[in-house]
Amino acid sequence: MSAHLPPRPSARRPLPAPTAFATRTALAGAAAALALTLAACGSPAAKSGAGDGHSGHSHAGATSTTAGGAHAGHDMPGMTATTGGPAGGAGLASEQNGYRLTSGSDTLPAGVPAEFRFTVTGPDGAPVTAFAVEQTKRLHFYAVRADLTGFQHLHPEMAADGGWTAPLDALAPGDWRLYASFTPDSGPGKGTALVLSRTVKVPGTAGPAPTAAATGPASVDGYTVTVDGAPAAGAAAELRVTVTKDGAPVTDLQPYLESYAHLTAFHTGDLAFAHLHPEGRAEGATGGPTLPFHAELPAAGDWRLFLQFRTAGVLHTAVVTLRVAG
Image (cartoon, rainbow, N blue to C red):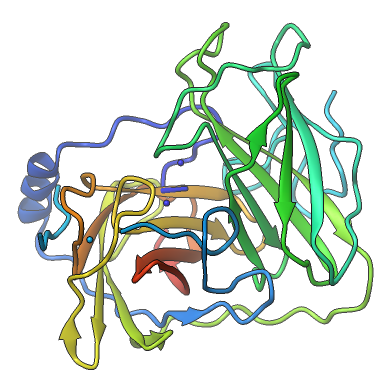
């Protein structure tokens, strides 16, 4: 929804208290509002739907506004399997602090659902089986196409031997990066949040699509979503997401992963990962229309934001390109 910004290959810093954040914001002056276009993902891998698992998840609604030796795969330009890329390596390594994301697969079929099997091993080389629960899940799994036109967010189940199987929806041809976000609950890395990733190739011909530029608010599944904020690279900032429909505030957002929306960001070019954390949990059965997120994005440039929010049991996935100052 873990946003899921600080560079988070190894640990996520605690979020500042909303009151402290508000004080800093007041002293610095009002941030320039950026109204950013959000549009529903157009690819088969980034769609709205019902149920729990892929890009569609469901939940339900007291009106409340949120407050407060791994298999490296085919790495893309500017990345390495163990050190990451130019955006600080956020989630671009298959190994971190002795933990590895391993899999025997470096290709997946195009156009049909597929299962990606993987294991997280610890510094001792054994599969990790103890994971802390974060936003209701022990592990968050993401699949993102290299040109950022495809996105899936899943919550696979772990087998008794520590193996995981991610049931992916059909993937379009191209290079994809797969991320596992988790926190070990035992061993030397206990309590340290990690994001590991590797790439796979989906055979076939597909031309890359350009990343959309930041513009005004737009509709997604009949909803209008705007994002306000002016983040700078490496600095804490607040982004405020507002959801409206037919000009009226939307107050029936349903809890999803402990909040009323989940926000994940990927840096264009190198696909560095960042999870933007909601400032507070869902306190009632419904919420909205404005949702504040704590953001620490490690690099300047364009970031592709994937916002997931639920209404009437349907998860909507909206996409926005956010320009981050240097």
